Structure formats: C-alpha cells, structure tokens
Image 1 (cartoon, rainbow, N blue to C red):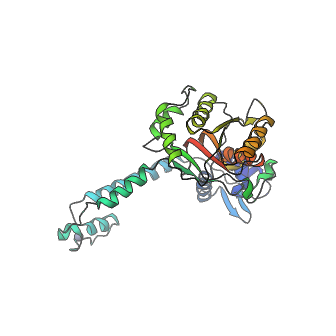
Image 2: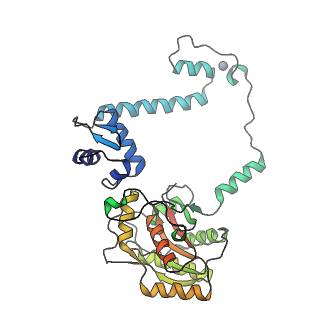
Image 3: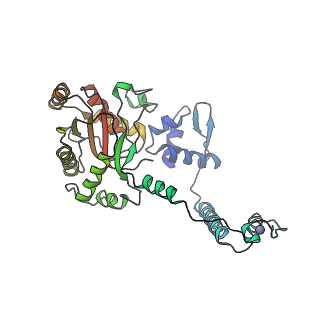
Length: 337
Ligand SMILES: [Zn+2]
C-alpha cells in the first residue's frame, strides 16, 4: 500500500492502473483492491486519467481491519447455520436482518417438511466426473500486449499480431488444484531440489498430450531456459520428445547469464523482463528452419511452470519469427485461472 501511495505522491500527474503496474509490482486485481481501500480511507482519489494522492496522511488501521474480518467470519458462520437450521429458514433470514417480527413462514422446507431429492442423475454425475478428470488445464494464449509498455522502454502495444501469437497450450495442473496440485506444490516448493521429472508427473503429461486434440500434430520440442530448475525443464523436454518421437530442438536462451532477473508478478514488469532477456540463438533458429523444411508442423514449447504467461508468449513469438507455423506451450503447472 505504501509503495502504491508513494508512486502516486511522487507523480506530478494522475496515474492509470496500467501505468501504476509499471511502478508497483502487484497483480492488477490486488492493485485495484488496494486503490479502493485507499480511496475509502481518503488517501487517494479517482480523477480524469487515473488516480492521484490526496496528500491526506494514511496509516494501516489494524484494529478496524480485524473488526471487518471478524464480521465476515460471523457472516460465513451464519451461512452454514442457515443450511443446517432446524427452524424456519425464512424466520432465520429475517432474524439475520434484525427483523423483530420474524416468525415461521409456513412455506419453506422446514415448515412444510417437504424435501427435494438430493440424489443426482447418474449420467450427469458421470459427465461432471469426466469433466473434472479430463487431463490438463488449457492455457489461453495472450492476445494483447499490456498497456503502458513504452514507460518501461519497450515498444509493444495493442494486439499481438496473429502471426506471432502462441496457440492454446496445456498445463498438467494448477498449483492450487487438489488433484495434481499437491505433487506440483512439492516440486515447486522453495527449498525443493532441481531433479529430473518425476515418473508419475511424466505419465500425467503423456495423458495430457494424448487428450490434447490438436489440429496438427507437433513435430518438434523446444525448452524454455530455466535458471532455477534447468534439470527439470531439460529432462521434461527430452522425455516428451523421446516418448512422442518429436525432434528435440534444444532450448531458447537468455541474452545474459543473469537471465530475466527476479520474477515479477504483474504483466507489464514481467513482459519487460522476458522481452529483454529471451533470445533464439542462431543454432536453434537453424534447427527450427531445417525441421520446418523437412516436416512442417507445430512446435511444443516446454516449461516447468507459468504464472503471467509472458515468458511463453515472448518465447512463442520468437519461435514463430524463426519459422514455426504454430507454437503450443506445455507446462507442468500454472498459477493462472
Ligand atoms: Zn418456514
């Protein structure tokens, strides 16, 4: 909050949410929530062209926020009580709203003793189970560059041209899922060692590939460069190309050994990092072009995880420039929706 407030106070003109994103490393939704709170507290104001600091001093009111979350917890408790109540449901609701005249309604399920069946049609139950079990989580390709990139010295704006876009990708699972999430969280824990890909995860990836339903079968595999888990990403790409009999083309590179720097979580800052860091070295470009001459087809772009999706977006654009007609991202985990 202080960082957001300082950015607004230091600016001599109002800042839009997009341009704040280039100054404060916060996701868009977090940033917007924060601005709302600061607005209610009188520390910022929405004006034409974005947000501005009012100059009112602002402090974190811990006591008030604790009271607010206690009230929210009481409300959640009341919702559960509503489900399990053995008194009239309407009366329950009216009491919640402090209605002194609350009394049994005579029409609800508790009052009439009439209950609707809770068993579910087996066909529908199976359809829902199939939907939940379907292998892989789709990764929607980015279609638009974030706004305000020129503030960061990157001249990308508007729509990502069709001929540079990634195709729809797949992740084995979401980091927050109950299914694969448990294992993925173990692999991506901060202190977890960089090891070759776990067999069970690999079998999961194989099922994702089998169920993908692509129009054209991929012909080659390229790995994203990884500074934190080079063994995992390299091994994953190698195993996929081996099992799928796809040409192993190698890996994209970083311009400098430092790579893109510490991971940023908002779109603009993350894109700036990867845009300045990622390259296709000449040897990889040659292999991509050669493969496309022999057997034209999509390239799988493999990484361990995706967050904002910008490194895969930039990686796909670079490979498409190098001659790949289609680039399909494939990761173990995604933190995205
Ligand atoms: Zn009732």
